Length: 215
Image (cartoon, rainbow, N blue to C red):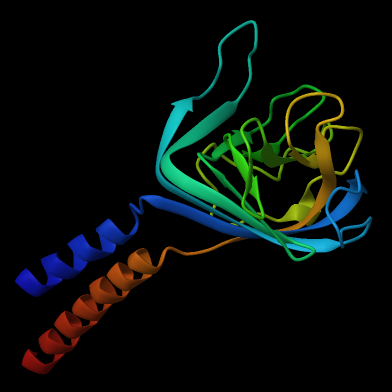
């Protein structure tokens, strides 16, 4: 019985991971030319890691009537490798939209905090992020306001200016360095969670075999 309880506790703990992590790929749609080797259609990759997520708000009341959750993280980082350039930012956040009923139905957004470093040069007001949205009527992409375990980029709609990616040195009209479209987002299972799940399942299997042997 003790083995079964231990396995169950480990399995439950594995489901309460305190980190959120994903990789993404993207294609450049605009560049101001300041990054050597980066041009339109350059494909690049990025990595998001956020620890101890906190849901700041959910189900905004009237007059907004918006089904939206915003997650901040106690610590985290966004790193990007683009055309041989190394980019990093701190304090990322995630927003999730579910059936908002407006010009956007569902959505998933990632935004970095300030500052941004490119090849060791720091831009105090620099940031990077992207927004994936669906058109009115396309309500089956996001189901619930929890951090998703998988993200199907192809299920979102690239339309208007509501689906986009950006890298900017500051918020001015001339501050945008790169614009991009997101090609894929792959959620990464947390290694510690996988280890805990493995330990939990191993303990449960061992207990079941022991009971069969005794029977």
